[in-house]
Length: 229
Ligand code: MN
Image (cartoon, rainbow, N blue to C red; front, side):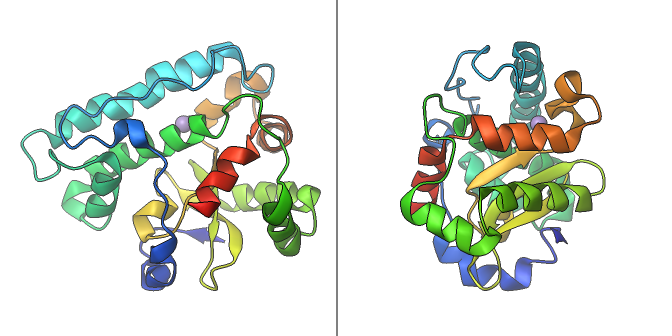
């Protein structure tokens, strides 16, 4: 399944109530929006995500989205909004596509880094595990589904654990910076499948990267918190 924000808009009302915000550090209602610090040290994710990849991905790519957004939003109706509000408010404005792209990517990566808070359980627990197993069979099935969905995204994008039209847990692919939040869905766990996320460490082996992230890096306590928020 590969959705853009437009194709799922009609269904968004179903899950709107479940929308989650996990970005307290960027929830300030005035420019400049500040890129939050990493919740780990740069070497913590190695060897799955090397220190060099974190340095570039966080320090260059992610930072650039904040920098561009702050420039673009200045003097606009977005200037007093939180980051999440900007994502939602610009999502359907063709004229504000640049603002949306940068805001969505700024938001996506805050969520991305936060899910790698160290020392958490790297498998779902309790009721979350039951729900994951009900949808995907087991954790291996969850990983395989994530890889399949990632292959259905042509080019850059993300795979998110979110909810589908029936409000069930689902892995859904999004192109470019599009995300569940923009279409009123919850964003529980995001896998960045832009090449900058893995190419230095895994070259073209995207599936191996996704598997390693899901097996070794995700803190399911953080994901649980988002699901229960
Ligand atoms: Mn990225």
